[in-house]
Image 1: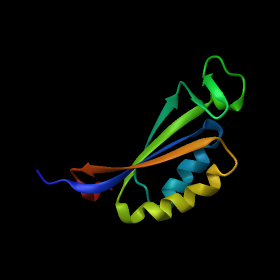
Image 2: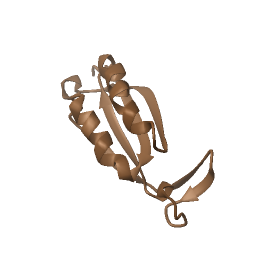
Image 3: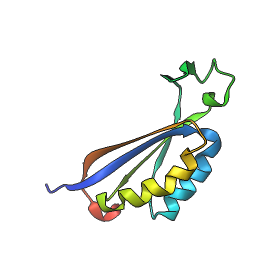
Length: 103
């Protein structure tokens, strides 16, 4: 079975800017993404959990999308303004997809 190169972009960000982030994805032509709640973690400010945190960090989500490699730079440029003033982490990994026309 033939697979096609793609990029998986995972963005963990404060839930309060989820709509701004997803709007930026849609503006870049992303046709699908998944949003997951983040239950907790650890970062520069130490450990936190959704249930035990009072600050904004308790409301984190992870937005995952898969795109064609040639669209990566445009997508990263579009989401950077959303990330600038908020807690967030972006990771990009290589992946393979079966139906390239969907991305």
